[in-house]
Amino acid sequence: MGRLMTGIVTSILITLLAAFEFQAQTPPQTTPAKPALDPQKLAEEWLNRLNALDDWHLSVEGKEDGLDEVVNNMMQLYAPDVIAEVPPHDEDQIGPVMLRGSVNLRKWVEKIARTQVRLLYIQKRQTVGSFEGQKLVYTTQLPWGGVGLSFQIIAAYSLRENRRKFTAPGMVVLQVGVDGKIKRLRLFLAETAEVEPL
Amino acid sequence: MKSKIIFIIHLWLRPIGLAFAPLMLCLVCAAAPVAAQTTPPENMVQIPAGKFWLGRAYTLYVDSADLVPRDKLDDRPANNVYLDAFSIDKYEVTNADYAKYVQATGAKPPWHWPQGKSPNGKERLPVYNVNWFEAAGFCKWAGKRLPTEAEWEKAARGGLDRNRYSWGDDDIDRSERRLGAPQSAGRITDEPVPAHLDGPDAMPVGSFKPNGYGLYDMTGNVREWTNDWYDANYYAFMPKQNPQGPETGRYRSVRGAGWLDDPPNTIGGPSDVNTVDTRDFSDPDLRASTIGFRCAK
Image (cartoon, rainbow over the protein chains, first blue to last red):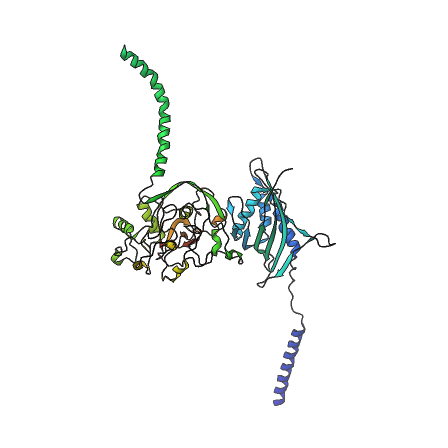
């Protein structure tokens, strides 16, 4: 009887051991890895969608054809709780404009779309020695997850109402969450100057 | 013959008179507002129509800190805003004023009044512990209204341009910090504070120098209810002509500094609530011992 019990216990132990070993050897279930953020691609995407904001027209009936599409396209880059700091809209404002949340950021994007045309925000290149112009995007891993990136720009735009043209050097600073959406935006434009027609 | 001539002259002049009648009427109409502008109601000051910079037009060191959702950034950007002429109370509404209202309407007295009566010897102190609805009710009873946030700020600036304080850009004497209860940011004055008033309460209205418009205690004594709903984002897209505040909200805008606030011990520091552009807000139901009001018209 004792031997029988010892045999049963031994076989149970062997079975459990075998099962454990099998489980240990099974490769862990893997989820498809998220594509890593391409900072240069995001910078280009941000600039392209900004420059496309004047790509709509007023229909004969006065309808804003295509406005929502270009605005939606830009807003897709942002998280709902985005916080942005952007330059003043016009000469009747002083200081940075704080935009809290995508609802307020959307108002700013719509304002650009409605008031500016010939948008040409370009990434500034840098040359050193014999190197040809390089588009630089400075990046860092954020302690709270995600990536921070910044790049220099030159902005040019005209006012829709009178076609007065302006240009300004500037800088874009972004914080991108782990989901790839922009959570913080700082757009600096310095020394905005009117371009006199030749 | 004579009467005939007079009759003919009369016939000649009558159409001329009729033609000039509308002109005369226009002149009278035009003169009326001018007269109104120069004679504001008693104890009120007329603030002239025109543009001014609403909000903070200068940089603080806290601006260089990382982005924060609210804090001191709700007063930016500054906006060049036009306001029609309006009148505003020279003083904050006092206990004595409010007692008349309570007596006339049966309104609820502030809870801190003993037996529902204005505290003895404190009739000239600004009334507080009144919520937004009670403040608005008082103004309506007085034939007035609460000022908009923009009106309040224009009045507080006293005609100065983009200044920090109601009196300009000068800091308050730091020695004031030794005082236990800095009743008012209006302490920038060469007049000594009466010793018996240096206690843990507000000061009688008009204890300190008025600002350039002749308004007292705009950034001191008690904070003041305004008519506007509060929205931290409002300045980003606000109308540039007679802004009335957001259409709705959860809190009402409160402006100015109160007797429990610190004096501006660090210019531009986070604790500096005495600047004319500093915005604050409160639940409209809240009754606080640092919030009073004044009316506009």
